[in-house]
Image 1 (cartoon, rainbow, N blue to C red):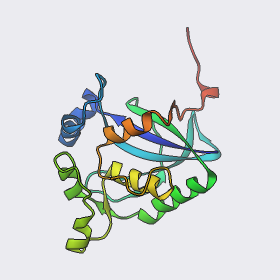
Image 2 (cartoon, one colour):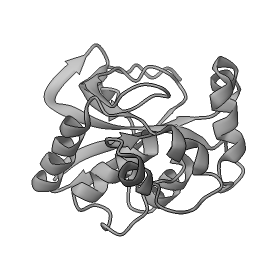
Image 3 (cartoon, rainbow, N blue to C red):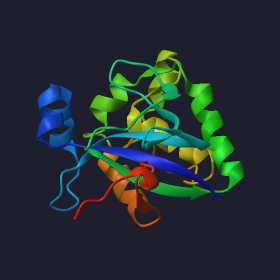
Image 4 (cartoon, rainbow, N blue to C red):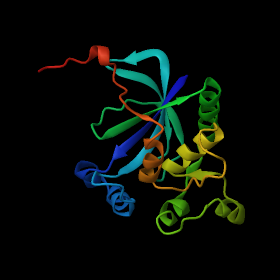
Length: 188
């Protein structure tokens, strides 16, 4: 088995204070309990043996508002990150990573991002109608990569909120940590 981590950013008060779009993402998140919703997601591909200080090293794929899709080395040092461990076959792992590599540089899907809370349809029609290239927002690129790797069915709608994606993965993944637990000191 090969492990990929779905890394979710929880929309707490500190995160909401940093940008108004974080507050908006929390407000439009579907309510799935009494916890704070997840408002951003990235896929993390850990290196086989590499570690940086106490964090497992690897590459993360996602996109930020107004940015482009990235696949870059990343440290998950914020306390608001919530990790889900997703076991895949080596073939699925490679396909998912390949999809991310090919999507690098694609632009942000503004239309899909703002329509997602009110329109529960596939927004890819905008690409065809307006001749735009592939565009994504964070949970959309993650869903598309997981569909390409055969984790999700091809027919699944990818234009969903990160909280919805979190809920979908909850039963099929385990809570995880990207820290090197051998280097963590526990004080009782």
